[in-house]
Length: 459
Image 1 (spheres, helix red, strand yellow):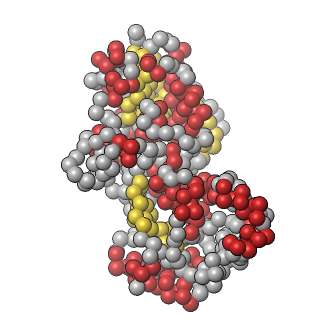
Image 2 (cartoon, one colour):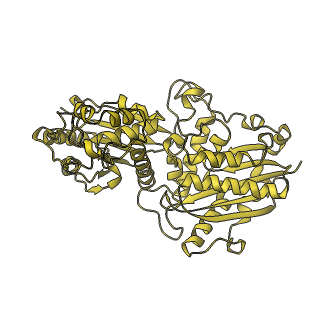
């Protein structure tokens, strides 16, 4: 049986944004590059582009030899873990692509390996060439390829794995690469899925790849360089594969840490009225301004905040301004952090909504895709917006600590996505005014959550 290495990659300049993929088929015995494939696919996310690259690489290999054994090498931990069956696939955009990839070859002819980005240069270069061609209004052709075939096209790139191919199973290949011994969780079940697609269509590790910038331009301040990313990826892979003593956390490199500050009280807050982005846009009350000052004092004492980003609404701008004045930092406004639009429910209490719109409320409580009366924003729509905002910010502020001054629903959604919790978990969290939470996103795609919530820590 012939043996092929398929290396695949994809990227999106914007995530979602202009996207493309690249893949290469290599003879595992000789190291010869047998075929390349690349395509500009329009507006898509990193993960969609990566899956499209995998599908294209497998189909290209299948055209050469449908009986070959295929060893896939990708720097997307999400795709590798999902296709290996260790992480669940929940995102609707990923499921059909994963099914398509899984249908090209029988599972007994397939193995998967995660590799650092530096070892996936050939496919990465092809993906960028495809995106460059799309920017010119063209499609990639083989004449565009400038990939250095020596960077991956060698038998050494497959070192140590070729002898496993005769087993014809993913189990024969996985060896010590499972998550069973990860000490920071204590069990395989506790770890599985923590970096999977419940973190949206683009996991943080993928957002940190830096594919959003053109290769001829320096990366924006705070982004991870290729060398740093390679080191972090290697360290993360080693810690996933190798258990350590006790409950010490795995060393995954410096995370992008979002400190999540809910704004202080407004006149509507103590009355528990719906107050989203479509209402009266209230300012802070006297109590709320005092809470913002106490939050500023608490954050200043920590001394870890490097940037401040706020929702565009008045109450978050005012809260952020109080903190910024104490820390001597500027405030950047990010529309993606705004509160959910509650439509006709704005300004009403829960009881008033129940009395006026009982059927709409019942549907809304049971279905995250349901909108409030009058065309508000569903929780599913909010989650999509927050996930895209998270991906953009993790790419820009990798390795840094950023204060996000926002609202109840966005903060709950950050936590829900990081934990991989179901949508109904939003109804099981309570966040006090001016409360603080934090989510750290690591280079291997995992996230950790810290919840404080009680405003007494600010006094």
